[in-house]
Length: 139
Image (cartoon, rainbow, N blue to C red; front, side):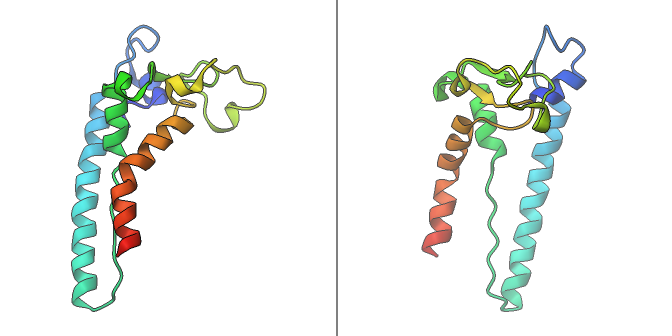
């Protein structure tokens, strides 16, 4: 969360000159994910005890996106701190539309707008999630 371009823009003391992730928001997201995993595990145990037969799965997207941001060249990215649409610093949703300026090659960007990953980043998320997806399908 602290590496989203919009979060960097809003929270950085020098958002246009120094576009580093905001550590406190990334830390909060990691802590939340750990708590979520523990809660899902406890819920799964309860479902098993009550013979409900339901299965809960956790798919981590934080880790793969963090990997893309920390080692962009490994994934073929050049830009990790701004989006392809508009300025890449604040635009999202309806602010990215047919009238918006776009980068020349979205595949070089992790983020499409200031919040959402690009198609290429989503592809890498899918590949990272594939073992869990295969496990769900095969079980």
